[in-house]
Structures are given as C-alpha cells and as structure tokens.
Length: 322
Image (tube, rainbow, N blue to C red; front, side):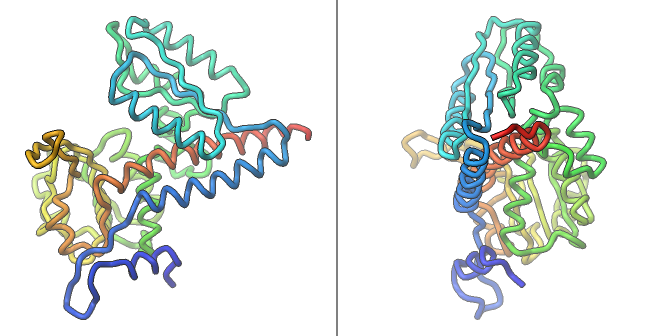
C-alpha cells in the first residue's frame, strides 16, 4: 500500500498514465525537508516540556572564512533556529594550527550541554591540518555528521541504531521512502565512493536489503551498470554525466550532484545542475529528484534530525529530573 506522501507524489506527476510513458514524478527535497523540520520541532517542544530549560544544542566549528562555507553554515543555523535547536557558530582564524583546532574540539566534546558537533569542511587553514585526524577527534556520541571512523565502522557492520548516519545518504533514503518504492530486493546502483556520500550510501542500501553495485572512475561499463538499476543514486561530482538513455525505465533516480555550468541566459552567467542529465532522465525514470531542491535540503534536515536524536540519547542516558 502506498503511503499518503507517495500517493501525493503520484497524483502530482506530470500528465496521465494513459500513454505508454509520462514524465517521472518529481521527488521534492524542499517539501520533504519541511515535513521533517515540522516533526523535529514537535519533538523538541516535547523535550522542553518534559525537562524544563532543556534544549538540544549544536556547535558548528569552522576554520577560516570561505564564502561557500559561510553560506552552508548560515542555512544550518537558520534551520536549527526554526526547530528550536540552540546552534552556535565557532570560527577559528585561517592562521589556526592543527593543535588549536584539536583543543577546540576536545573542549566541545567535554561540554555536556552540547549534543552535536560538526566541523565544517574543507578546513581553510594556511597551516597543514590533517582532516581525517580532525574529524575523528569529534566524540562519536556528538558526531552528528557521521564522519568519524567509529560511526562509519558501525554503519558498515549494519549497526544502524547505534551510530550516526551521514546526512546526505540519510536524506537520500528518506527521499526513496517518499516514493513508496521498497528498497528490499531491489538492484541499487551507487555512482561514487566518497566517504561522505557514496560509501555510506552503499552500506545503507545494503543493510536495507538491496543488492548494491558501487561504480566509480574505474568502472568500465557504466551505462550498462546504470541500466540495471531499480534505484540509482549518483554522487560523482561531474555535471550531467549520467544520460537519460542509460536509465532503466521506471527507476528511482536520486541525484546528489551540485555543479555549476555556464549559462549566458542567467544574470550570474551560470546555473546549477546535478550529476544526472535531468531533461533526458526525466523521460525514463519513474521518480527523480531535481537539482536544486532535491537532496540538498534533505542534508540539512538530516543534520537537524541527528542533533535531536543525540539530545534524546543524552536524556535517556542521564535522565535529568524535572
């Protein structure tokens, strides 16, 4: 039986099914993330009513002052404020050394009033800083980005209820759920093997009982692999590399790509596209996410969900009195 959300998506599809094929149903990350944020707002209100003065707290640690990082951080702080999460932005100068960054992380790790800590990447320091060392310094209990080796290891073992799942793959799973298509028993293809998207996406699909193929830059027969996918998740970082004719008819297509391509018709001289050629894939897929407005909003929503989950785990563990 289709969920109400999936039924709504089907009813919202362009055209009717009278002909052999119509355009794919668009799976909106904007709409889905709004539903997630509303649910989280209710959960935060419950926590505050049961435990007077308690609020989930998130710290975003930034090194340097990159414009793109500032934009991402702003969207996270705004989402947190709407939900009722106490979010704080800590910025270290680009002159910060590795030891200074580690000391800041340790200080936040030891602060019991903080439930989530994310280190904004990339680290914008003029000094050598080991990104892997920095991300692994975050306490696994506060690693709401799910990037530490502890959380990654638990995910790879299938311990989904005892770890934090990286936000983009977690958002992709939520979007797939919105379609009403069951993952179990399906052939899923993931393009890309990054630690942030591709690798954890593979693990999530696998432990939700899909048969998973991971493709990457060395995969020789990419169109053939894509053509087998009932569920296709693309996070390759190459503009419109997946062509519509590759896509299996009726497949669920989740596009994690964010790429800027020249466009003289835009005031900025460029436009944002995904890793999938949308216009052609839209002719064959059953469901497809847009870019922008698809996976991007879900990444922020899942960060908020992980932060609320961390706060709930803290309350269960510590059980403060009213």
